[in-house]
Amino acid sequence: MRLKLDENLPHDLATALRRDGHDVHTVVEEHLAGESDPVIVAAATDEGRILLTLDRGIGDLRRYPPGSHAGIVVLRAAAQDPHSILSLIQRLMRTHPLDELRSCVVVVEPRKVRIRRPDPDDPS
Image (tube, rainbow, N blue to C red; front, top):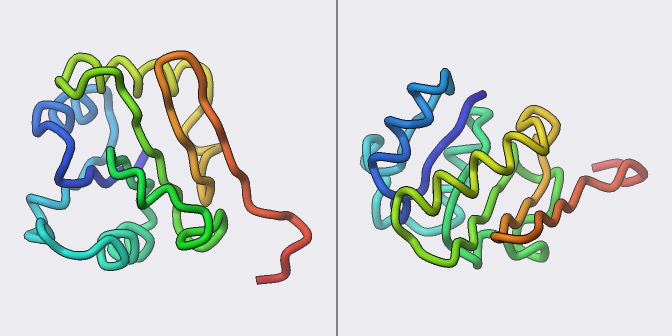
C-alpha cells in the first residue's frame, strides 16, 4: 500500500510499515514539514498515497470530503508513542484492508474505527 506519514508521526513508524511491505513516504523526508494541511493533502493525493496523521483538522469532512483525496486516516491514540500508534494502525489493517479505504476519511480510535466513504451518487 502507498502511504504518506504526516510530520507528527514517529519516524520509527515509517520503518515498521516499510518492514511490513508498504511503500511509505514521509512529509519530513520530502521536505514538506511545516507546510499547511492543504499542501500536505495535495501532495499525498498527487502521489496516490493514503495520508496517515494525528492532525484532527485533516479529518474535517467539510475541508476534505471523502472522494476529494487519495484517503486520510486520522489516528487518535490514547498515547502518542510509536508502539501505541503502530498498534492502532495494525488493528486497522487487520480489520479493514487499506486498499478499501482509498478516498475515504477514517478515524481510528482505541475502541472503534469510523469510516466515511465517498457518496456513490455524487458525480464529482
